[in-house]
Length: 509
Image (spheres, rainbow, N blue to C red):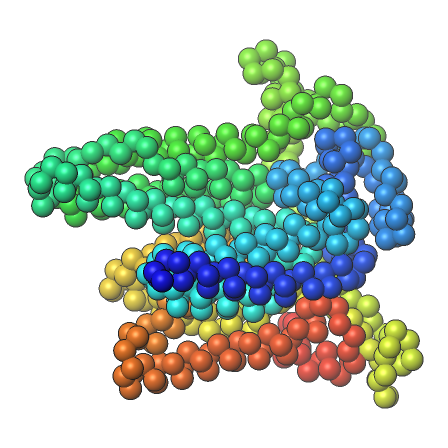
C-alpha cells in the first residue's frame, strides 16, 4: 500500500470523526442563536424569491420559526452587508431538511468537516508526512472554536474552508510548476536552464482552482481579498525562485512579468468572475425586486447602466453602499460586550458568548443542583491548551523561518498573517474572536510541523521514543482540554459552579 493511498484513508477517517462530532445533536438548541437571526432567514427568503427579504419583527419571527411559522417575511428587499455565497450554502441545508435548526446548520457541519480534510492535506503537502497531516487534522477536530463554528448557521466556517482550499491550491501549484520545470530539463537533456528563461507554462490548473476558491471566499466575506492578494504575490515569487534555482540567472527576473501576468488572470480575474457568478440569481431577479420600505435599494448611475447594463450597475452601487456601511462612522460608534481586539486572538483572550440560558432553578429542565442554579451556554472559544501551544509554535516558526528559510513554514505563516494582521486596521469598531476561525487552520499546521520535527524519523531510536512521549503528551492535553470544555461548546446543562470552573480568566466571562 502506497503512502498516498494510506494518507487518503487516514484523511477520510479523521474527517469522518470530525463530522460525527459536529453533527451529533447539532439541532439543539432549536432557537436562532447570535447572528443566526440574520443568515438563515436571509437564506430562506433567497430560496423563495432569489434575494434577501425583510422580517418586520425579528424577535417575533424568531419565535415563530421555532414553532414552524416560516412565512413571516415580506418581499421587500433587505439591506444586507455580506455577499451571498455563504447564505446560498446555508440555503442548501434548508432546502434539504427544512427551515429548522438542523437545516440551517447542516451546511456548516459539512464545511467544518471539509475544513479538517483540507487542513490535513495542506499539512501533509508542506511536510511530506502523512503523520504530520494526521496530527494537524486531529488538532483541528478538537479545537473548540472550529467545533462551534461548524455547528452554527454563520458565514465564517465557509470562508475558512474556501481560504484554506485556495492556499492549498497555491501550494499544489508550487509543486506542479517545479515538477514541470524538472520535466522540461529532462526532456532537453540539460541539468539546468543555462541562463535562459525556460518554458512559459501557461496552463496552471491549480492556479485556476486557487482563483475560484479565493473568489468564493470573497463572495462569503470581503476580507478574504487580503489573502488573495498575498497568495498571488507569493505564488509569483515562487515562480521566480524556481527559475532562478533551475539556472535561469538574470532571465529569472522576467518571471514577474511573464509568469505574473498569467497569474493575475488566473487568480484575480478568475476570482472576480467566480465572485460575480455568486450574484447571478440576484442579477436575474433585480428587475422584479421590491424596494422602498426596508431599503431604498441601489441607485445605479445612468451612464454606467448604458455601458454594462442596469443590473450590473445596480450591483456596483449596492457594493458601494455595503462598503460605506463597513467603513463608515456608524460602525465606529457601535459597542458590544463581547468585542475582542485582534491582539488577543492568538491566545484566546476574549471568547464570544453565542447563546446562554441562565438561572435555571433546581427541578427545572433536569437541573439537580444543590444550593446552586444551572445554566446552558455556547461559548465560541478555542481549546485553550491548543491555542497556547499553537501561539508558541508560531513564534518559534517565525524565528526559524527568518534564520533557516524553511519553506514549510513560509506558506502557513504568511497565510495566517494575511488573515490576522488586516483586522488591526479596523480595531476601532467591534470585532469578535470567532473571526479567528480563518487563523486556526494555519496555526495548527505550524504546530503539527513542529510536532513532526520533535517526533523525528520513523526509526526506533531513543530520540523517537522521547519525541513520541512529547507529542503524545501534547495531543493528550489537547484532547483532555476539549473534553473539559465540551459542555460550554454544546449548550449542555451544568451548574453555575461547573461553568465557573471552566472560566479560567475574567475576560472569558
